[in-house]
Length: 179
Length: 426
Image 1 (cartoon, chains in turn green, yellow):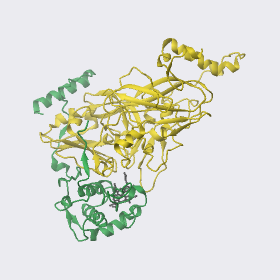
Image 2 (cartoon, protein in one colour):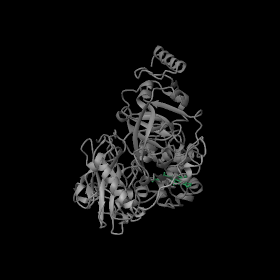
Image 3 (tube, chains in turn red, purple):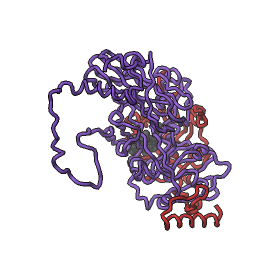
Image 4 (cartoon, chains in turn cyan, purple):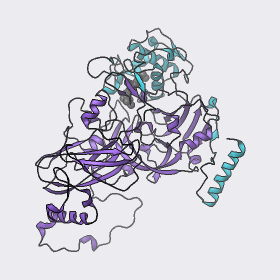
């Protein structure tokens, strides 16, 4: 929005609040959003995508992640990631097994980026966002290692992590445009 | 009123819906009066005690009559390994009309309800925009708003009816099986207004919406849908959105699985590709028999269910009943609801309230003469696009049993000769 438009928007808003008149033309943007730069959002915007966008600095290996996992995650996910409930199973499964397949990070998730993105923002469930970015890289590596997707020395960082191929990467059909 | 005067509409006692209107209604009243009051024909009506004493005065916040039932949401026991996680279900069989009272709207949380101070809350729009913007709650209150009635349904709703483990949930009620659907009037700002203000870049195709809860719940929505009828909702049935519904603001994506209407909305990021959040990959995806999984299955299917009579109710005596229920479609409005009392062999059209049901609940009703024999009550909705609600078996034949979401097959309530109503697979 250009500056003059924005001023008009604000004037319209002022007119509204002064007169109590509750109509603002739909075509006329109110224009009250405050401009902000992406560099001011580096901590706030934590979305890390399959295209490698949004990954922070830092790196880690499964070897380093073992201790983090055992201290921060195993209480709910068990030492080997086998889980303490249906909701907390992190390993195993095969999409082509008989019956209903066990769907886990290893057997189901199409992208490794999601493992990092989710753990960084939502885990450990009792204290989300309490891990450092380095710890998130380490423990992400450990979860992938427990699933046999990487070895314990593989260094994960913003470059290498999005490139990891997940076993079920071709297992999804985009239905977003289906009617 | 004699049996002959009630025009039959389908087998096993279904009566033409016109009897709910005008003359027919009087007829029904007579039939009901016969059964309910006849025993006390000699009784003299007296003025009741409450007509002789002033009651308490006005109050600051109203509640339900203590005689109107103690029905509430049904929530599971807290789970220490899933802090704040879980759901609560709306008591559908106790509600009438189409609007869910705010305190009874279903919930689904992934890390509990955050206690958000609106003066500290931010809504950020960034990514592929000409100018990233941040909005305060106070800013947003000044924008032009619209009020619309929309249902929300969790895509896991009615999941018990997949019967994946052979269990047919015989103890199920409308609430326990189907209570993850509710309907409210939502007031908010079209998301397109805010996106236009930030200036969407031509290469943007998706938004990533993120909540301010401890799980930072994220979901991707295609830009064309986001620019269509999506709201940033600030009010729910006239009052500020309740905390468990996303206070101070939530995304409201009409007709679509509830999870994408991200609560406690704090970020909308414009992207070229979906972000593939955990709750659109690991969860909320639908595995087909060929082991491929459908992703981004947004609209909720054409669906209906009878809320009275429904599971765990008992019909006290043979006679005339009003069957009623709700119907909805994530793709349009409800055009028709048919009801069967013989497990789907014959059908009669139910009466639909003359209300706008675009992506909202519709209420249907039809009179039913219960003979005292067994019956299987079903309802079947058709939406404005001609989509017809499938049978349970038809749905399973179509999509298989590996998916866990989007059950919208026909609900069957079995009535036995004792009048007991139970969930059955028919």
